[in-house]
Image (cartoon, rainbow, N blue to C red; front, side, top):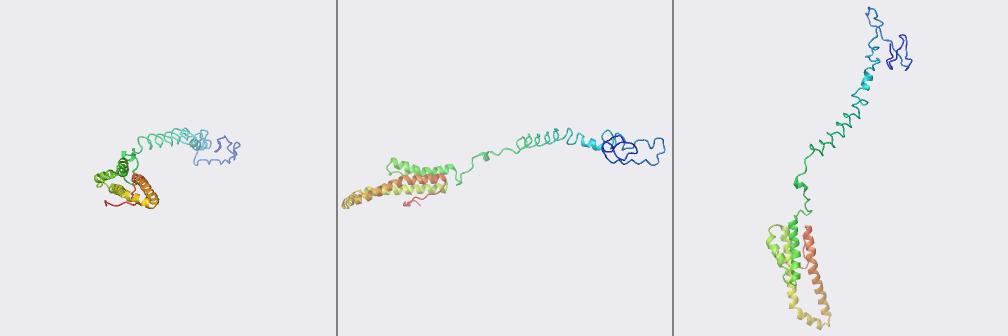
Amino acid sequence: MNCTVCGSTLDAAATSCAACGAVVVPAPVAVGATGPGATDRPDAADEPGGVDGSGAGEAADDAAGPGESAGPAGPADPGGPAGPGGTAGPGDSAGPGGPAGPGGPPPPPSWAQQPPPHPSGLSSEVRTWGVVAHAGGLAIGLLSLAALGFLAPLIVWALKKEEHPFLDHHAKEALNFQLTVLVALIASVVLAIPALILGVLTLGLGLVLIAVVVVAAIIAWFVLPIVAAIAASRGDGYRYPLTIRFVR
């Protein structure tokens, strides 16, 4: 008979394998075997195709078979994890059927590819018209010595006040400021001679005070529209200080 562990040929009376030391249990004799050689015929355990046969039985065949990890279809086999059906195969994320392949999600729609809206929620056109109301008044005022600066915000207010409350607000603020500047300009011309007389009577102190007021007014007339235009470009409201509200 053969060893059930290593397959070595053993004597019929042996109780252990001399090669591997495994304990050998003799196979029982088939009951009712009366023919010649009934006790000498190798049983299923001794046959080459059995569990202990020299042809490497079921356990040996299964352990080294083509479907196991050590066989051709193991981890390095094309059918394993690294093969076409594995993580790097064509059907995975990096393959044609993955997210980047033809079977992945469709490209985002055209509107999703546009730049995000302004934080204020206002379109660039609305904010631009708000800037024009302030900056246009300053530009025309510089060209006309502050006499016609109200024209730009007046035009914007007349054309755009119904389109958006933002434009109505900024155009009215710019218009009221430029009208206030115009009133101050007229008042300065009318009061020029009395102011000169007051300066002479106060030995020049009145003239110094008047000069300081005039310089401060000029700086405010130049700076405030710029500040208002920046606020409009951000989508914020703005209210001019020291301004007469002719239009409400």
